[in-house]
Image 1 (tube, rainbow, N blue to C red):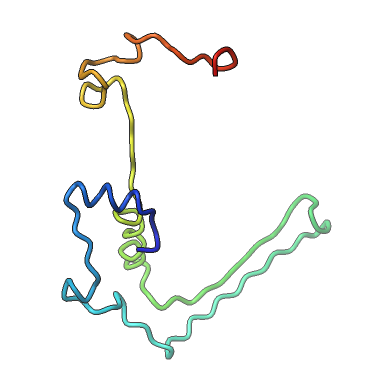
Image 2: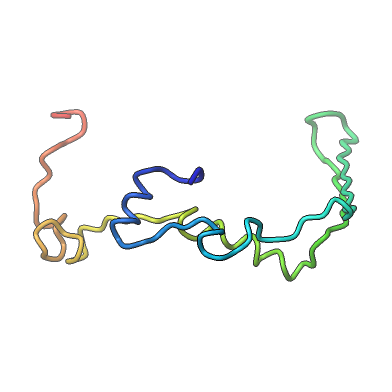
Length: 119
């Protein structure tokens, strides 16, 4: 996959996730049609009137973009979804995640490891 770890891939496969390449799913190997004919220059500047690393800095930039602004969230949203990103939580307050299946496990169980004393 290249953008995640094997452990996350294995966990997702155990949950029933099926990974396919774009061609296996019937899609082209590219999402957008790139073109070398599109010229989209960008320029920026920074000016520190008092010298480098002192006080105020004026910054400015200008850019010409190939895609309309409304389309950019469509392309950037995919990187926050599986398999590129995944969230794991552990809550001993929840009955579903508690080791004994009862709520508030942390409040009911004694702490066996105390930092600096027996760790």
